[in-house]
Amino acid sequence: MVRGDVLDTAAVEKAVPGHDAVLCAIGTGAGRSTLREDGTRNIVRAMEKAGVRRLICQSSLGVGDSRANLGFLTKFVIVPVFLRHAFADHERQEAVVKASALDWTIVRPPHLKDGPRTGTYRHGFPTTDTGIQGKIPRADVADFMLKQLTDDTYLHRSPGVSY
Image (cartoon, rainbow, N blue to C red; front, side):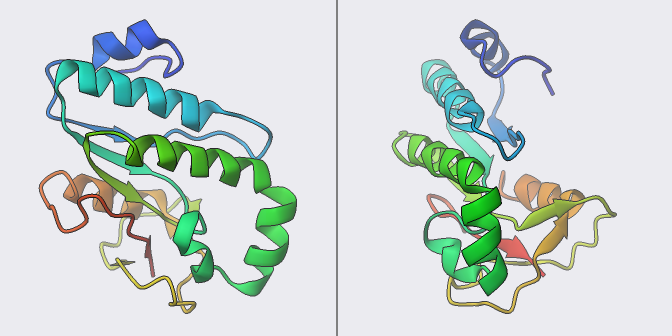
C-alpha cells in the first residue's frame, strides 16, 4: 500500500512501478468533483507507463447499465437529486478505465457501510435484477476486489456486488 495524493501525477507515477496490480477505491462526497475521473486518469497513465496491467476499480451500482438495478426511490430521487454529481464523476471515471489498454475490472457496489466481512455476497447479477440490497459492508467489497486480482471471470466487465 502506498499513501499519497492521487491528483499528484508525479507521486502516482512513482508509486506504481514494481507492482503487479492497482486497486482503485477513490471516494469523495456528493458535491461537484472530478476527483474520481482525474485521479483514475493519473493511475491509468502511470500503469500504462510502468507496464502494470491489472486494474481493479471501484465505482458504484447505478452507474452505466447497472442503473436498472436500483430501486425506484434511489433511481428517481436519490441519484438525480442528491448524487447526480458523484454519479457523473463515476461515469467519467469508468470511461477512462474502459478506454485504457489495461486488464481492468470495474466493481459496482451499492451504498457502502461499515461492518464485518461476511463473504456471502452476490456478484455479477444481471442488470435486470432489482432484488438486491442497497447496502454492503466495505469489507465485503474489498474481499471481492482482492479476489479479482487472480480471477479473470470479470475481465473487461463491470460486475455488481451486493446481497
